[in-house]
Length: 94
Image (cartoon, rainbow, N blue to C red; front, side, top):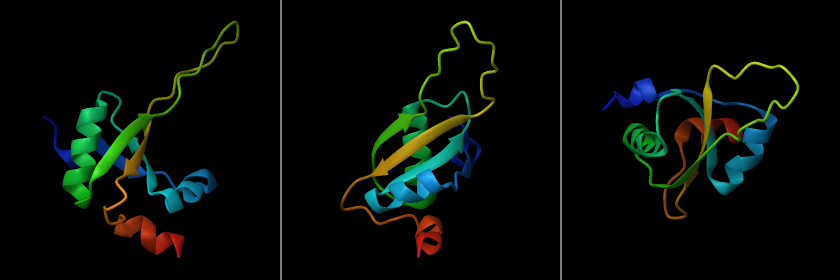
């Protein structure tokens, strides 16, 4: 298993991610090789919270258009209702 700090690369701070903070959904850039289970365990271990589920960023079809795949993986982490919030995001949202 990887070090949890190697799995979570950085938080995503955008308008869309700020809108999700009220619902206890936090967005992180994570290692491309990390699975949902590894992401869940890393967030729980680093921030000391209880994770309800992890949703990875949507898959984009390219069809007849050329494009590059992103070099990072984005994960939306939803906390359980009885879990405390992540202090880093709470201080920004105020």
